[in-house]
Image (cartoon, rainbow, N blue to C red; front, side, top):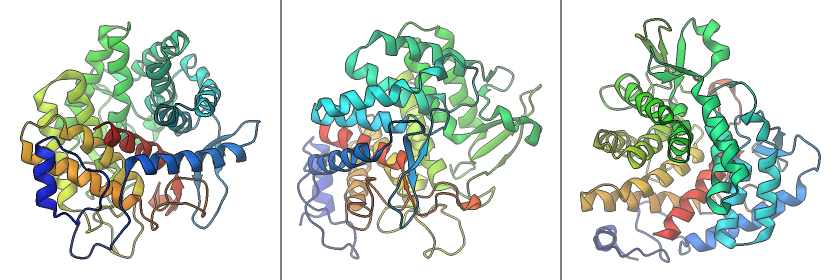
Length: 401
């Protein structure tokens, strides 16, 4: 078993090994060799099982499977998670070049087309349409997909408040909060706007995405670079009112998936703008997350929740972070730090790819032990579709390295 410092040295020289276990810690359990290719094949097998189980009639888009259950909870195109399943199928088509996944991806993505023609319900249009049609266009260059993406980007932009400098996340909650609200998850939806600005859409879409990221960077974080889940702004003046939580343990706690959205979002913003302020900030929000992880690198659902270690983990946050760190490692100029980020991502994926986290025969998802909305006791210790999406995305990114 190779020691970690040797692995880091190899990564610095551009040599990536995927076929052996890493020495994670003194408490690590001996595991079979980890291979991104092998895990992608596993995902294909599980996805085929899911495809065979889904009904022809809607709702037929998988969202989550409760702990100790076998059947997917199904949703229609309006659900914020609706884009992840077709996105997974596109990724599996990319990995396998198998028409089964190509045809199925197009079928399930087609259900989301109305989102490009309807008024914006909330900010999740990026998750819904970019993860589905965005991957589809990237792999097929279908002009119909491009048209849907551009129209949806224009719809998302209608939620932008120039006084605040951010996109309104939840229009339905303005009356409840009495304020413009922006959630950390919204950073992920900026990618649709950046894409549209580069593919025939208005340059204004780029400006909206960039300003949203700048405003979030200034207002959404504490001194230690941990993030608030929600920030409330005065709708008329744009002034920040306060930071709160919705899915985290407390207003001042670090909700795991929220921090992972930040790592991913600011890394993506650097990719799209080449603004080094975003690159530097991505590292700061990544570092506080990494410093506080447990030994297996899979976070508890909230870093500050009471009851650790006897509380649920959130595999979905680990998947998002692993994917983000793989990309971030390619941008960081400090070779030692870049190698550390990549090694951490590989360790996360290796640990997710063990019997404890893989669903295998338990159900037809890829992974177990994600947590959706713990304060609502919703999707706790469950298999959740967005965990599977970012897991397969991270595996593909690792394979391409």
